[in-house]
Amino acid sequence: MKLNSVLAALSVGLFVWTGPASAAVDVPAAEALLKAEKCVKCHDAVKSKKGPSFKVTAAKYKAGPDAEAALIKRITEGSDDHEAIGTKDAKAIKNLAEWILTQ
Image (cartoon, rainbow, N blue to C red; front, side, top):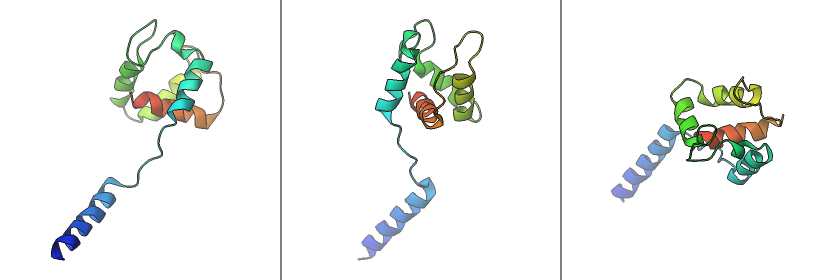
């Protein structure tokens, strides 16, 4: 009986320490957006094409502060060497950024 109490306390402590789980990335929606926006023309999940792979992009942004916000800014504003994403759906853009960061 004592062992069960200890295990229960450890389980609760682990949950509190790790916090609640974040919402899962909608992988099919992210991949559909990548295709619709023609991102896959220049990018791949693991191989570099005209642009860096999403794995390389994830590593670059994870290293900096506010990775998701910085990546969303890059996706939505574009730059001289990167076209901005066409969709204005904030939820879809956030999901895409989260997907990229999981690569």
